[in-house]
Image 1 (cartoon, one colour):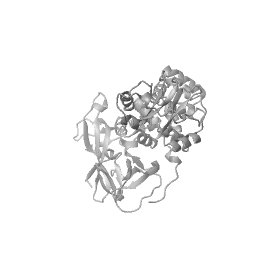
Image 2: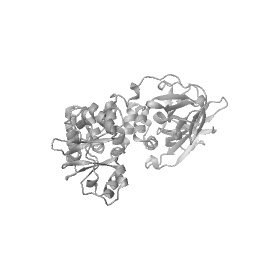
Image 3: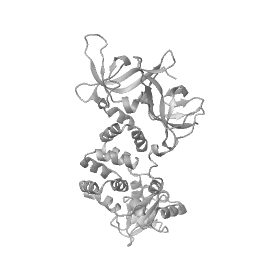
Image 4: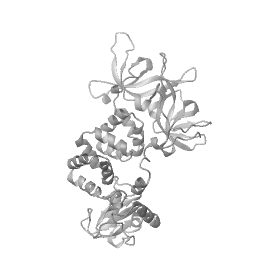
Length: 422
């Protein structure tokens, strides 16, 4: 293990057991404050294991920490959910982005203001990992993120431990942006409420929309209500209509009306439509924006559509063919074409001649249990939903079914039982 390790750089690195098998990912580092003038001690890492459980990894159980990941040594691990103690701080959640004062190296020089970018730890003579260096971005009178980054000894930094109002968000967001939305949502759950809301508010509308879709409903609501209404409406516009409808359903009726009125009419229309259907039915969980083509479209056009990067894998797994208009509710629904079939056909072939019309579409009032049974019977990842005149209204995807079939609190780690030692 190296003599100096920078803690923020460990975020999201894999954790390996002694056999080399990956068992989790690093999510934070824990430092323990001491009553004397001695620097804080790094006592371990927080790792996310299976089922999104976050546990504490004692620093003594770790044999290696580098850019490839963290390797555990022999011994048992306690899988009990991590809880921070009163004399402990988390590097990413509590220290990164703090505004600090750096004492000058020589008397008579001026102090410098800066923002914490990273924390360096080293082994001391007592084989303890302690904070020895702080990477700071200098405040220059312009935006802090444009300032020079430099390293200083820990004892020259003032304000490293202080009120949370001295903490910004830019460096934490830079780290979180390397994560997938689900992992980023998981990381936000570990932040104090005020810090979580501050970080969420600093995200772009698109990034925040992606993260909200991965959070438990109570966290979605708490974050959304902290935004001003126009910003909240902008974020809802960038969410998938079915997720936006689910989130709005958790708000008071009066607030639903206000936010829907603030959304662009074209973005609000599918959300309003989805909110009409009863919970637990195909209509309430479907996406109203599957890939839809008219029968005269070519295979080349179909492949171009499913290659669009914003489409999720389950939505891109097939195209639905319907007569014009091709926006939901469409003209008469004709059938679907799976992407594997598209790959086997000539690019100039017409999709109208390739449709699979043998799968009976769903009606909006069909319950989730029946949808699950049909998907399992035909090995499908998506099924069309049509109205009484056979117009395509949308599609139910397997991730929609899973999301609504699991317990409501499945995204919330606090709802899971504590684990046993491993």
